[in-house]
Length: 170
Image 1 (tube, helix red, strand yellow):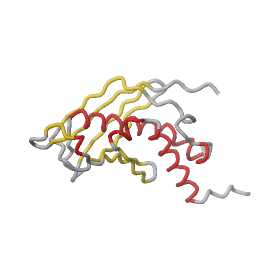
Image 2 (image 1 turned 120 degrees about the horizontal axis):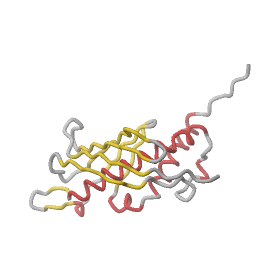
Image 3 (image 1 turned 30 degrees about the vertical axis):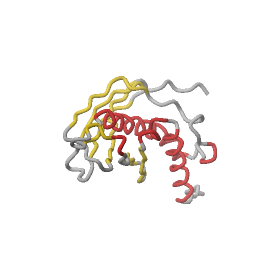
Image 4 (image 1 turned 90 degrees about the horizontal axis):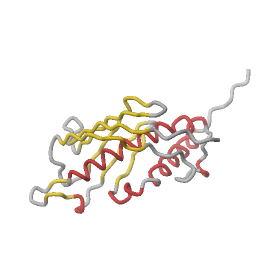
């Protein structure tokens, strides 16, 4: 019995990285805020690189609440998009050369998001991870947690509900 040989790991990594770059490039706000994404297997960590323009209260100084909320919402949206692409990426149906924001499926739309500000965001890099609680054909629920120096001391958390895009007719 002949089994198909698995793809070399470098090819799989290149395809995953290209899919993530294309997914993130389709969200202009990501570049404006300076959000980057680190990928380890199928797990994503959003990184908000500190910039003085993110300060809301210069007296403390503390990150602006809107920046924190946008960071959490973006982490949730990218996680949903990443989860929706994962099977396509792993099956090899998406190749690195053809990936760009125009060829990717549409992104989910935010229905609502509730942010809990647990402590002031300090003037330094922040990190966030999102976990999809439920994702169906029409609706998804995502929980996100953001921290700075210590993951056990989150600075904010959010729960968001999203409208999933209709499948594209093929």
